[in-house]
Length: 107
Image 1 (cartoon, rainbow, N blue to C red):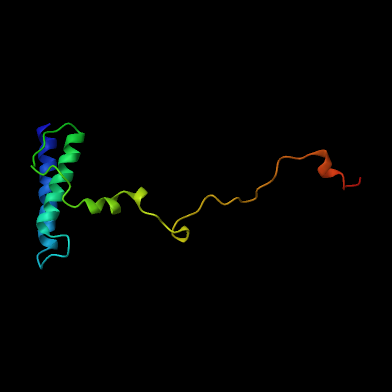
Image 2 (image 1 turned 45 degrees about the vertical axis):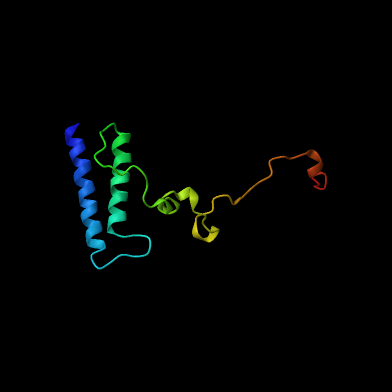
């Protein structure tokens, strides 16, 4: 259990180091190193709680809730030309045949 805990904390630290690298030249509107590090702590807490581990970070709420729009694929509407449409009927045959349908045929 301690090994798993340590792995999560180490992975979170690596993500924070990556955030430090990403924002080394400055931030952007709505996102900076501190906010991204808080998000890493938040998501790490959620993942650790899901597997029954103690929570190592104080961050308990999502510091960037707008990111959920991009992370939950059900929230994003795609245009038909961007996805494979499988609802087309190909080679569809009407299996409902009545003898009246054959009345124009001569043998």
